[in-house]
Amino acid sequence: MNDWRPFLYGGVASIVAECGTFPIDTTKTRLQIQGQIIDRSLTELKYRGMSHAFLRIFKEEGLQSLYSGIAPALLRQASYGTIKIGVYHTLKRTLVPDPADETLSVNVLCGVIAGILSSAAANPTDLLKVRMQVKGREGSGEDMFHAFINIYKQEGLRGLWRGVVPTAQRAATVAGVELPAYDLCKKVIVQSGYLGDTKPTHFLSSFLAGLAGAIASTPIDVVKLEL
Image (cartoon, rainbow, N blue to C red; front, side):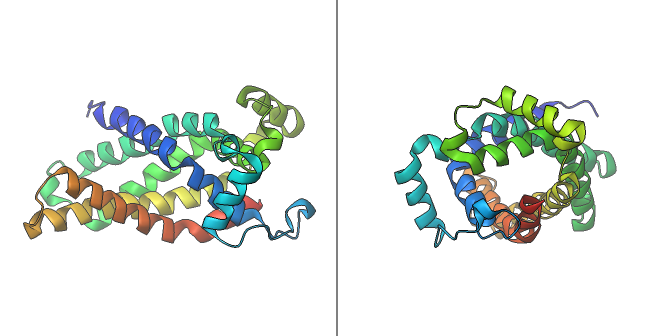
């Protein structure tokens, strides 16, 4: 199949979503890395919860800190989101040409494969994003290019793919749950006759799928950040 639209639409949608949700992602990252034993600079429990962390980061470090790491994050979505969604839909249509014949098991398999391939390719940008989020305002003077070069000089090529195994596991979990969940939720809502195949249906399906993916991937996400 030579349909390029899933790749293009997937990449654009991922970039737009990243811009809107990035401050929440930064807050989540700070909450997950605080209280570590292996890094003395992160042993303090500074934040009591999501709202407290968001407000404290904003007050103490400014809005810029909440968007620290946005450049590699957008680059990551341009690659990760494009490959993930494009491969998922292309692989589905290759295995099951008729959408009516899709099964949950096939969709999960396609989601897992798409997640592993896309996360492995985008791991360096994911690493840059997380490190810049953790540094916040302290690392705001270092741009993405120099951060990339410094990691390569200090840790080598392997350093850019550090944590790729848990990253791939997380992506496989997210994609294996999130993408099939979206298809399933949309199918159920459309068949119910309440909303039909409309924008509210797509929005609600996306919300439920994102929630399912986040719940499934959080334990792996915590492990990934400590590696």
